Image (cartoon, rainbow, N blue to C red; front, side, top):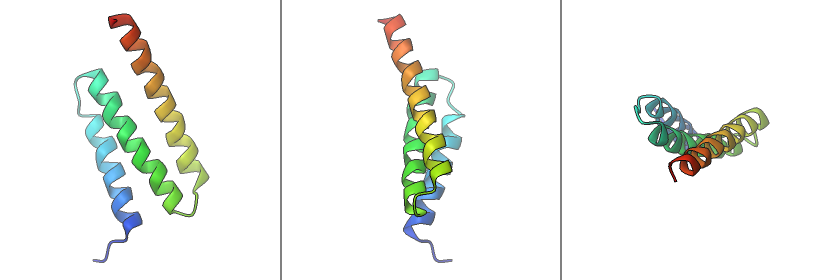
Length: 76
């Protein structure tokens, strides 16, 4: 099997997002999910700018960042 850089980034993104859902702590889940979504954004760019992949994952990054900020504000 020959893997391209695009394939590797896509698989890393999938594995990272999947692993994020195994986290029991919400902060860790969101941080790992942000990393996975960042990899998916890179994957979308490598796929000749696949707008649905880029936009969806960018929105998820914003949502995760918002809730991380909100959680930090509450815990202080």
